[in-house]
Image 1 (cartoon, helix red, strand yellow):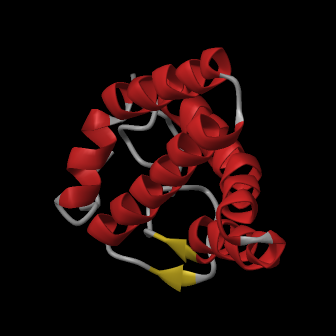
Image 2 (image 1 turned 180 degrees about the horizontal axis):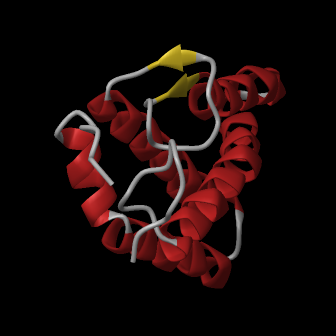
Amino acid sequence: MTTDGPGVSPYDTHVSSGTRFLIELTAWIAGPWAAGDAVGGWAVVPTLFVLLALPSLFNTPGDKRTTGGVATPGPIRIAIEMVLLAAALWGAWAVWPAWLAAVVTLAGAVMLVSGFRRYRWLAAGAPTLDR
């Protein structure tokens, strides 16, 4: 399934974007919480800032409807999303009950599987496709 419209990745689906958003939210909540528990409360704000700034500022042209920020090559966008996934998984397993961390892990797996075509497209440099 592809998403129609200008400026939108031809390989992003509702499932891949939905689980990606869920992982981002989890990273924004559990990541700073776990950082605060691990090294002290002072780490919460800088961790939250970094986890919010990365996906907001660095975007690959043609991947989303939003424009602005810093135009980023596709492989860099993949790396940013993997950092968010790692923060979500680490944070969830560090501070949440095991059943909830398992749900986050499952959502991360669904994000990776459902977004595989998009990741392959991003890794190729997000080439523009004629529609």
